[in-house]
Image (cartoon, rainbow, N blue to C red; front, side):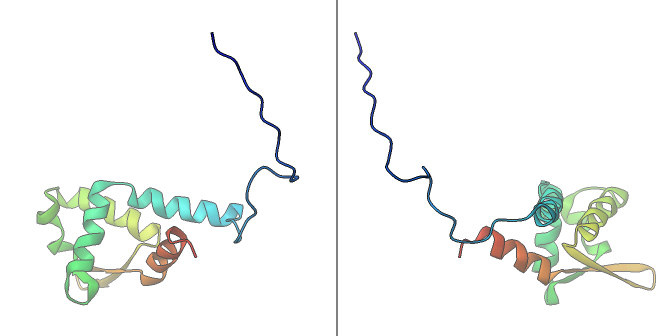
Length: 116
């Protein structure tokens, strides 16, 4: 047979700790969710890491196809999602598109994920 012991409630008005920083507002939460959703795919994470691994953090689309083992249309689709989310920048040079890291977006994500 078990007995249940009821403990007294704490004397403070709240049961949780107080906030030490500003939480995200609705707009910020939606913005971060959009970025994190774009990154929440193994292929897109590989593409970002491939761009980061290239000299100058910049890579031609033609250099990103073979390493991920997917066709050009599929890779282009993933790159478009990353550009639309603000994770990568795209620059057309002749017939080729070059992709570079959007440092400001990645710094915002790093700051968000690293508590102060």
